[in-house]
Image (cartoon, rainbow, N blue to C red; front, side):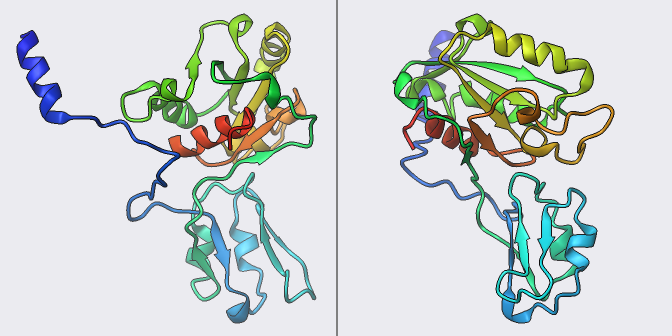
Length: 238
């Protein structure tokens, strides 16, 4: 049995990606951030009307900057592209990482960073993407990252979900239990801005409304490559 497994491993070879050294292009049909074609736009506003998260903003009378999209709110649904095939196209930007306006703490973290995942009411799509990080394909341990079971052992909190009202206390307590210096990453559009859930009686509308966030990783859900990019940016290595 062991010899059979060993032989199979030799035939398979190394499957671990060398991302971020080599860019990773998704397969056909993967939707990136929509892009505006200024020359063909008639400023009808249908794209903003159909956007479920109000990620698209229109500025009447400003031809050069009439159309903008907020990556932290966009869920890459493609509705705007369907309703306006003339002026909006599916873009090829897939990794979006944005640092918050906080004092940089990256110098406190080197090549051994421990992560605690905190689910604050997500649909589990972002969580599933995170589970791939410790598998043989992405293997973030090669980059010096690993997951731990307790926030008391963590340097980084990766938070998914919009922070539901029932989990707000748990988020605050987990943040308090994580020793300083610490970093907080908002993973996914829901964590970044509330996403499709928005802000309501049941949802806080984003992690930064409850605890301070250092890095935002938009996406619905973000690709594993985006998660890696966010981690590297958080510790000052990207």
